Length: 81
Image (cartoon, rainbow, N blue to C red; front, side, top):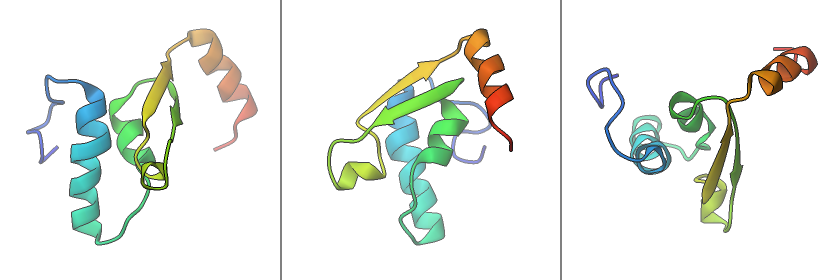
């Protein structure tokens, strides 16, 4: 909310989710956590990401999103949060 004044930037999500938001979060926390929270905030639906190197384990190289209502219903039945 603070970084982008309450709305998402008008540019590709992969840029600001995987790089900008991740870098700001790491500066704030002072440790290197994964990028799952950043992806969850920006990408809708159920997401799968692919990593390609040691560094990219924290920042995915490719993200696929599924926004199917059928998949969401199935997932809500098999997950217990």
